[in-house]
Image 1 (cartoon, rainbow, N blue to C red):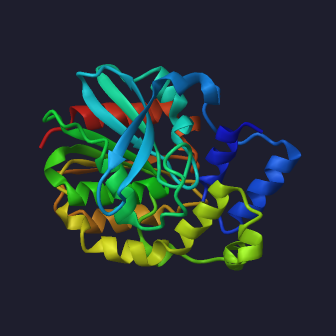
Image 2 (cartoon, rainbow, N blue to C red):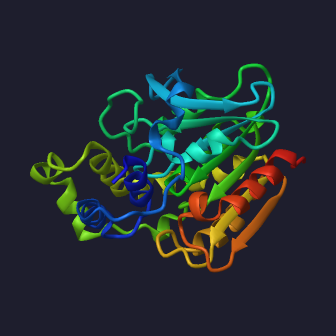
Length: 284
């Protein structure tokens, strides 16, 4: 199985995600992911240095119009930048697209697991334009919590926020017994790096989201909540939670995709692109 396909599947957050990912890989089954091959975008790769509290080098893929609005794409867990290959090879018009390998994944610095949202946010902040342009941030799944933290930390540098199948309600986070097994050292050492790091992130997520809750009103940019009504991996109830918490946002637009599941970047690309266009054109 192509790594991008496995990453895309494992970005799902069902309770038995690690066991299911291993089974699918063994059977050679296909799962949602980009149409473009993983290697198709390697010429686009660049390195950035993230500051405190991460203080590490991160890797990203950069494409599109270098003078246009910057769109920063942040994957879930595990995932990688190449999960966004279709958006990099066909960038939204008038936009520069930057897709990040989050710390602990892909080609970013060979750190251990980085389960802290503020450290992950520092990696995204390293990609914000330094020339006065503001950025549109899009986070999928756990990536939604990370871009929300960036927008809370840097409210004046964010033009708009797209939270795609995003997991932010701490009350909905439950640790499954399989995750404790995956965290046990003899098992953890046998897991692929990405799956081991994903398990560590998910096990630490509830208190991280609890800490983020009080910061959400700092987000000032327009926010677009995009969620499938048949998402069995990140509950639709996350949308109502965010609607109640984003009191500082200049606008909150909710786009519910009827009958769609968690894998929106790949099975609902036209609708995701439309949300990106709306975010690009939004104004307070």
